[in-house]
Structures are given as C-alpha cells and as structure tokens.
Length: 450
Ligand code: OOG
Ligand code: NI
Image (cartoon, rainbow, N blue to C red; front, side, top):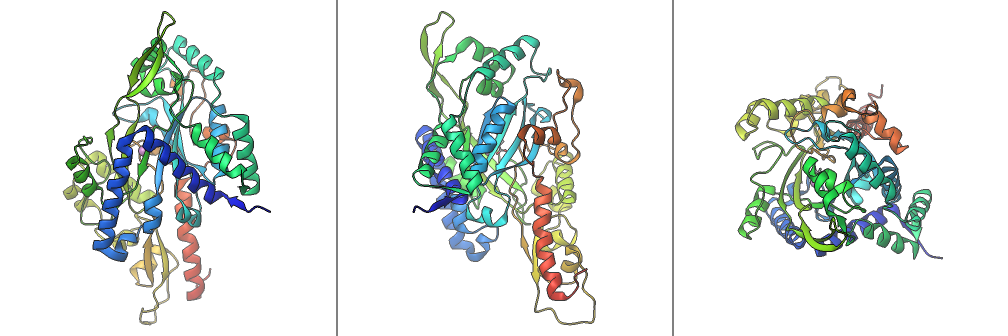
C-alpha cells in the first residue's frame, strides 16, 4: 500500500517545483534566491536565536510567494480547487482598482495556509488577481466584449489536473504516482506559454493596462513573480546592486528603524525582456519580446491589529514614512506595541513574575502591562500591494464603487466569497484567533477562565 502524500507535502513540492521552473525561465530569480540565502545565513550567524523570532530558518529558507493573474470567476474557482488541494485557502480581499498611484483593473485575494502549524510546515502563498472587464473606468463596451469572448474561449487547466485536485482536497492528500502527476500538471499550468499572441489585440489592451494585456491578451496564465523571504532586506538590496542587478529605487513599506520589524517590506527588479511569438495582422507569425515578469524579495515583520494598521496607514499617508516619522508615532518595542494593542502576539505565562496580590487581567494588553506574560510576535502572512493608504480599507469596510461597474455588481469581499463558492478568510480574524488561543491557555494556568 502506498503512503498518502499529505497536503502540506504536496504544497512544499509544488512550491519547489515552481521555483525550479521560474529559475530556468527568469535567471535573475536564481541569483536573487542565492543572495537571499547568503544574507539569511549571515543574519543567523550574527543574531543567533533572535534571527528566528519571526519564523524558523527552515521555514524562511523555503518561504516563497508567487503571483498569478487570471480572467474570470470560472478560472478563479478552478484555481481555488488546485490550491485547496495543497492546503492553500483564499484569504483577504484587495481591490487594486483603487490603488494609487496606478489603479489596476483587478480584484485579488491570496491563497495561503491559514493554520499556524501548516504555515510553519510550509508557508507558500500565491497572490491571485482576477480581471474586472466590466469596470468602465478601464474598458469601453468593445474592449469589454472582446475580453469576455477571449476569456470564455480559453481553458487554463486540464480535467486531469482538476480531478486530481478534487481527489487531493477530499482525501487530504494523494498517493503516488498521482501526487507526482498533480505537482507536474499544476506546475506546467503556470509555465510561460509559447503560444502566439495576437499583437494588435495585445497592444490595444496594453494601452489601457499592461496587467489587462497580460491577462486578456494571452491564452494561458503564468507565474508572474516568485518572491523569496530575506531576514535583512537592506543588506540584500546592497548585495544585489553590487552584483550589477538594477533594483527599483527603494524598499517599499515601513522604513528600517530601531523598533520591531512590522508587516512587510518589499523591493524588486524588472526581469529581462522575454522572447514571445506574435500573430501579426496579416496572419503571419513573428518573434518579439515582452517584459511582464519581475523579481521581488520581501522581509516580514509582526502583524498589526486593526488599530495598528490604522496607525500604519496614517503614518504612510501623512508623513514621509521615514525612520524619524516612524519613531515619532510608533512605540519602539514589541512590549509597548502589545500594551497599546497595535500588533498581534501570542502569550505564554511568565512564571518568574513575583506574586504581588494583584488579580490578573484577561486581555493581552493588560497581561503585557502587568508583566504576566512573555510575548511572541505573530508574523504578518498577508500582502500590502502598493503600500499606499486606502487599498486595504476595502478589506476592512467592504466599501466599493458601484457606479463604475457596467453590470451593477458590487465587487467586495462578500462578492468574492460568492464567486469562489468557499469561505474567504479575513486575515484579522485569523491573527485574532491565534492570539485568543494562546490567551485561553494562559487563563487556564492563571485560573481566570471566564
Ligand atoms: C501582484 C502584485 C501583488 C505583492 O507582493 O504585493 C504582490 C501582481 O503583480 O500580479 O505580489
Ligand atoms: Ni509579490
């Protein structure tokens, strides 16, 4: 009898296999992974256990996020089945149509493990964007009709892949050889295709949005970037430049400062132009190239509570986001962030606390203020596309822009959950649950169970 390869192992194999593919497709990615590993080893040597405070070195070394872009609710449901097979579930709603300074005609979610144990085993996540052809800020009736026709005709995933995915999700894994076949087919479906691209149609879309062209101008999908995690992104940036790779001019997100690492910091480089084949207006097929894929790297910090997130958004929109502005508005230690309920932590009982006759509180800020607990940061597992203020607010309030939709549908988190036909997880709820679980254990030990 063959062993069932469990979902987490399928996920890990899928992430590795995509990484191998992307390394052959985009050689600068392989350099980026190499430099990230150099930096991570150096940080581990210098900082010891402190370096692993936001994840074990094994986790961080294996950690990647990918991004893909697709065209229709139908395709999104299929992708949800494929990711569901490897224990990755839709989490968070991002409306990039509202993103300053460059609105993009997509709404997005991230597929990722949601359970802390599963994240520790392998935290692979994929930011997944879906085109909104019905948004009249971007597309007129002709282009919309063209897009809908082109997207309805294509098939991204084979029946064999989808059937294997369903079996894996139902059984919590797959036996061999089905497991290997699943990983192979899933990887192939995100490879860059050699199929010719209709040049005129692609150009029409590209004038509106390069992302729209990358989705609706081609007949397949592909992994758009694959991002390793690094423990010191400033050092990585210096080393990449020293190797002659031109990076964007800055690291996005919070600045480097003397307080805790918070949320997500990212930087990227543009990949080289890649050869693609084109169908010309006269029907002949010619060569050309496109630059749609890039390289990105990220450093992760502690997850912020809604209050912390609000403070972060204000900081980024009202100040220059510098280390000085940051220091003026954010508390400089994990403990102070916990006391002000700005960031998420798990708590364990502080057995060294002297008895002083005080009754312990039950909330984490109170327990932190009274010295009752030791704290561990909960790492931010989500995204900050275009870190500008306001993108995420749609996640919090569900507000949307009805008047822009040609078909009158409001595209918010609830709508996306309906499209997916499975729960759309809210990142704040997941972080809160993790904190609450740890507080229950502390309360049991303190005898304060409500
Ligand atoms: C996805 C952009 C979002 C990130 O790291 O914030 C993303 C895309 O370009 O399709 O990957
Ligand atoms: Ni990314």
